[in-house]
Length: 250
Image (cartoon, rainbow, N blue to C red; front, side, top):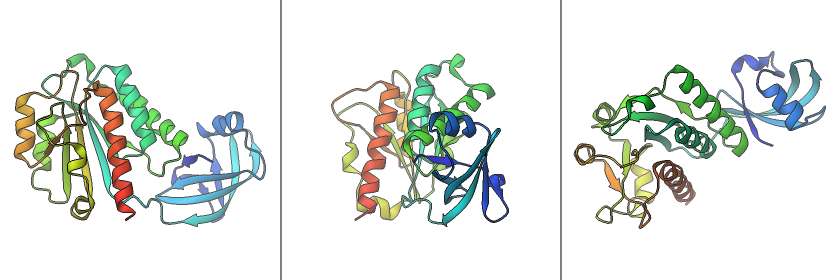
């Protein structure tokens, strides 16, 4: 069963959870839950196992079967910084990263950003919905946060000197290390979070790459294939999470 991300206000008393809003038609008409159906919900970083008691108009009443405080065994935080693309491509990236289950997504304004691509409040709200839908479909235990747009140079300035954070920037070119050259057991022992940067169509400028290297960031490539920006973000983030999850189990 897919995970539901619910607000703490959905808990009633000590033994009930009320599900309504956008989840109600999804559960009633798509998943067709009925009395006795089991559901899994994430509430305040805890896993709630629920049993449907009754389906009323506009709400589903569930009893709490069990609560597991250990919400996610993957402890390292992945934060993705995606240079702004055309809105349809950004929608795709947000949706797929929501499925992968990262900590936070930040749209980045860099040297080659087109001004019309900078999102407003309505677009950011849309991305929050897409992130939630992606999480529902994949069963991940961590709902991706959507941060407001930020300037590339300001972001890396704020990262400078943070010993527990690693920064990775993807760019084409065989003169840069391969992703597998830096992801290992020692990497997990050193860092608590990984900040991953993906460029716009046309890539980061030499000035941006130089500034990134100055703060100790890792400039790497994904091999011989040059991917489109949206494809690179999805594949690159997925590869990093899969590798780090595997390493963390050793």
